[in-house]
Length: 237
Image (tube, rainbow, N blue to C red):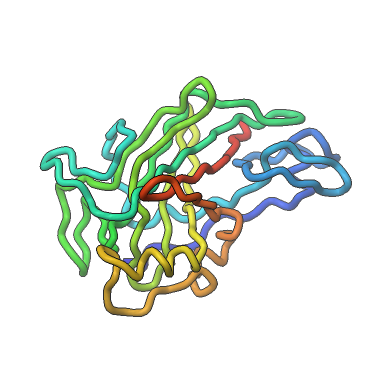
């Protein structure tokens, strides 16, 4: 399933990030920036630092499904089993000196189910063509927020646990992946409906994660019977 998952993109240096934000001496650098508060070259950064773009992979399907809860197949209504995960994106527009909420951006996410299968594709594991579970998009609101209800993803051979996402705004798009702490995945994936035979690839052994995945780690917190996580990302326009 991972034959087409090749690392792309690069991580900008802190100096380049400072330049984009008007805090350094370099010429402007395009790209997407995001992340927690940090500092570089003795100058404070606002609530966004660089995140790497990562491969789209072979399983993106442009379903045009505008929905917040992506767990079910829209045709059959069958709900995918798994630990609930509420995933919120906080999308900002990066400008000189800081980031401001970006409304009207389309945020797509897609992921495998608890057993490592994707909908809408045919591969050596299954034929799920015509199905659309665990796929969908939301448009960011006035605060730049887009929220999804999904499940904690499973795994498949050769890849660590991850969720794909794509952000589209006007004529631009940015694609990357989100990752999870191995210890949390160990606890969740040891139980039904996730448990299965085989050896799971961990973050450190995933070629895509090694291309900057540590900057794309989610920090889920317990929320009811599941988890909730927020990911901040800014678009330099």
